[in-house]
Image 1 (tube, rainbow, N blue to C red):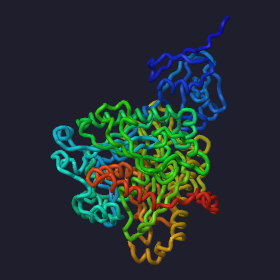
Image 2: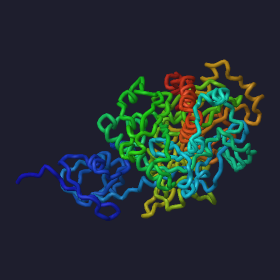
Image 3: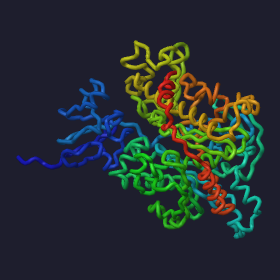
Image 4: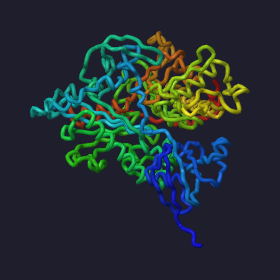
Length: 630
């Protein structure tokens, strides 16, 4: 009897037949699902190390692999559960996929019930606002003569797209000449010099730092407050996730699937732009400019560049400079009348400190505060910048995927039902979930708060060891919808220890090195005299989606931030999506004063930054292992 070269695979999702697929015998199930746009969580990009791509074979006789034994409980193996990345298709099969919908990832900035500008306590510096505070009624947008720009933050996990009212749009609509050469030359020079933040983003609203809500005097609207030109924001999943949730996985996948990765992210952005314009009622004809920021790997994938050099020392990018394109060059499916709109891709610093960090610095401009600052994006790469006056130093540290809910047994992205917070009350662990939905897993902020709470209760010791009664099976956190227990395991705790140690040592070494490398940095005595209320500590600005959801009080037992940086969190300030705000600032300045001035300011920041390689420091390893303790 002749054996067919193909197998028939019937895919069921939530107990309903979805697709009947045919594949060559011997094909890996994960590859089949990817090829047919059936999305499944796979943070490790198919290496068999995360255990997230679990599916159920409804027919008997499916081979069990070593990876299956490691990640799937015995009772689930008996019910036919296997890892898709390890499953080789050798015969016809019926497969059930019951996965969460990653398209429902919630942007942390949108989870707050308050419309508030997020600002630090010290009136000399303010950081980014809750962008929801500036949503305008779609009817108003469709009835105006204003022109708009589109700002895009291309993240590894999520993509944010904003509609930005251009400040010169009313002038343009009246046909007034806005030639930059006719503007006040003094004002033009000021725009690309480093500026203090005394009035940046300040308004009469509740303001907050990492610990609590505070009040600060509003200074009214200024022409530099481009955050107030943000009209509306939409967010969505970066569907490259199926090839891994961190940049290293994407770089590896790009060797064979670079074209596919580009197609995915281009399609995601096109869909979000269409969604943005539909929700606001803004027509394509009102769009004048687009600006894009993101980490270096994501921008390389968007442009279709070869990413191989990003993954091997000395980690050389194809391009870090600002790029000017036309919308049609990148987004072929958008309407024809938008194809000639100028698109600017913002510049970056290095392979692992990208345009998202430069854009965040460009937005917040913590230059002339007469005080040192640290700018931190808590993500896989642990990107950070530090400086004083016109000195900027940048670096990164490998924190791993735990901050994004990966690398832990029940880790999931920030979707409805993800446990986002926890604390003990009356001897019991109480958890909160995104949108108060029934718990289905644990996101990044949730695992930090859970482990910090366990340390406070003495259930995890200072070395990270879980108490004996929970060591084998993990500490029970909650039950998901089907009654299965959600637990935090000893391995989960180790993943958090490694991530927080990388951040701790990275911050400590960066701050130490910039003070030793640059004699312009003030001494400890000078810092203390100048800023007694913060005990001479630097301002620490935390940007990014994950940072928007953390509370210093609830994670302080983890000792993520070294004593050289903060004592009690009073100098830590939550900034939100500063990358997106940087695109807004660029679009507004380019519209009002011309692209030359807007570009010059960005490029000046890029030129003035110096990269420090912390991994080359001889003390890094010893300090890292010490910092793993709680």
